[in-house]
Structure formats: structure tokens, C-alpha cells
Length: 298
Image (cartoon, rainbow, N blue to C red):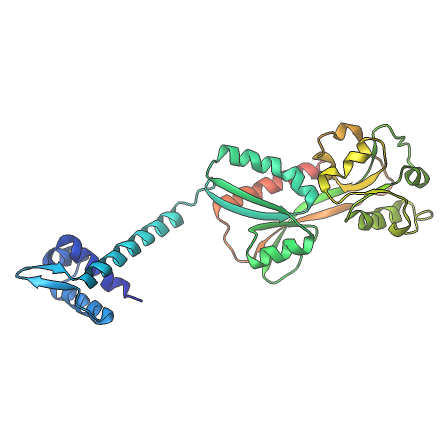
């Protein structure tokens, strides 16, 4: 790799066309400029200039080296501008979270991109283990997880908690709803629904509930945005985090059944430990916190 100091001296020499002027601009002596030129020629292995009296012209090797020097200078200037101008409205942010949280968060991200045309956001709805793996590998700037991973290379910030909801049709009786009535409606199952049932029903229906594998399944849906649809049409009930309910367009056709014992899941924002977040990432982190705060107040 060409020595950067010798290369810059050569570029200034070419720009001025004079050793004395180059030395003045570089705050060097004329012999010092000549020495940098000789060292650069030794490193390249060819003469870079052809002397003509008090002036000089570039050899073909000199023209090639000058092009490299100018390109490197431009790259360094661009780097300095990027470092010194950390704009929250410019650049890309990549993040991952659960499907239900994504459906609530994404409209807020769209609003941010509308006001900032140079801001690009990539949001992926993935399982929890892939959230953590993606942040560790650097594919995601931020992740939202349901627990503190306690990993030495990850930073975890507690955002708050999200209610796990028993969702029934708006027309269903809720005073109070019985396990038998739920079985009559039938479970609208989904990939996370069985674990939710084991947690929530064991607390609230200890005498009747015998495990999620014994529930009467009315339908199974693996698309998060479609899980509430059959419930809204009176076909069954389901279990979802509050974000999955709030983000459903026809949530006025849904009812959250009151239970004697509530269950709330933690929300944690995950990033790589020790990384100073760019302004654009910090902006999205603040947006995530605001969405989480709204869920906390429900």
C-alpha cells in the first residue's frame, strides 16, 4: 500500500507544478518534498516525473499514481464528512422483532420515512432466537426481544411490558367467560399460541385446563395480521400480545376478555454492546420506546 504522506506530497506537487510552492503548502522544506518523491518512486519501482529544466512532466506511472492519490483524498474527505455529520434523517436502519410488535411499529416507521426521504428502514418479523442472532451478527442494528439475553456481546434495555390478551368476538359474553365457553368457541391457533395458552390458561383455569395440546382447535393461522380475522367474524377465540390486537384494522369487532390473573411479557431492546449508535438508529430506538410506552399504558 502506498504511503499516504508521500502520496499526498506528490499530489500537491502535481497540483502546484513547483517544488517550492508545494513545500510551502505542505509546511515542509523543498528537500523534504524531493525526499518524499524519491521514496514514493522507490515504493512504486518507477520514475513518476520527467524533469524539464525547472519544471517537470508526469510519466505514465506518475499519471496513474496521481489518479490514485486524488481518489484517496476524495474518499478521506467523504469519510470525514460522514463522521462529522451524523444526520438522524439519512442512512439505513435494520431491526427485527416479533410479528405482532412489527405490525404496530411499522406504521410509525412509515411516518418517519415520509418526513425523511433519505432515511431507509428495514424491518423483519422473525422468531426470538433470530432476533438475537441477527443483532449479534450485525445484520440488525436493533432488536426487540421478550427477555434479557444476558449475552456478553449484547446490550439490553428494558422497554416495558406487554399484556397477553385473551381475544374473543365482540359479541361474546365476558362476565366472566368460562373455559367451557372458550372450548365451545374453539381456539384460533398460531405458532406462538400454544405457549401462550400454557402460560395464561394454567393460571386462570387450573381445574379445567389440561394443556394446550388438548384444546379444541377451530383454525390455525401463521400470518400474524390474519390471526384476529376469524375471531372478528365470531368463529373462535385466540391469544395475542396487545400489539397484535391494537394493530388489527377491525379491532372494534374484537373484545379482550377480562381474566382474574393477567400475564404481561417483558419487552427488551437489544443492540451490540459497546457500539455508539448513529443518530438515525437512536431516532428509531426512541420511536420503539414510544410504541412500547403506549402498550404499557393499556
